[in-house]
Image (cartoon, rainbow, N blue to C red; front, side):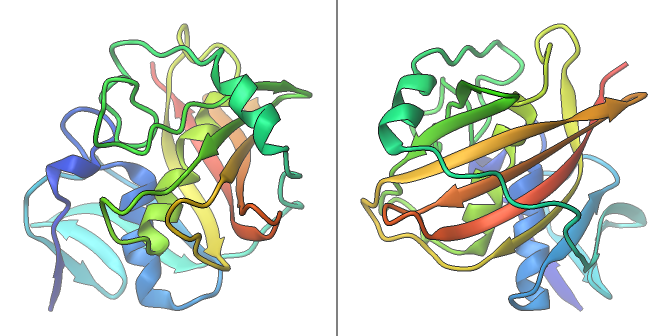
Length: 218
């Protein structure tokens, strides 16, 4: 039986794994097609977890499910790197998100993808991958996680956590490449909020795309 262990570096909430990164690790077992990952409970850090038939378990507790996925809409369109950099200057975080591996402003060892508004319900952030960790699908899944959340309105007053994510990785960036991550809001229904994200390389090629369902906290 296969096992996964999420190092503490790859947290989302302070004491659990980043949903995008966890989903990406499961998605790597499906190949290159779109994969849907549904997060069922917080992912423990630094703990051996079992992979059974593509699903992730902590003992008897179901942590995440994975299956073949498909997209319902077009990927968010690209934003120029300079515009994404300007948008990121307006990024605001708080104590709840500051330690996140992806968007945490308090993380010197994180991705620091700090998305700001670019209009029409969209946000964008620059991302220049470094050589501090191998660039694989799980890192791109992580990079596509938080910008979708930051496209939602009122994240400070009504915070949300990732519930499910359908994503596909088409190509990997080079170390030092000027990439842009875009998030787009698609409305909400009850406690569920919907968004999509995409990563573009310096030549505007689509590196990866995702669609997400976020769950507003009670």
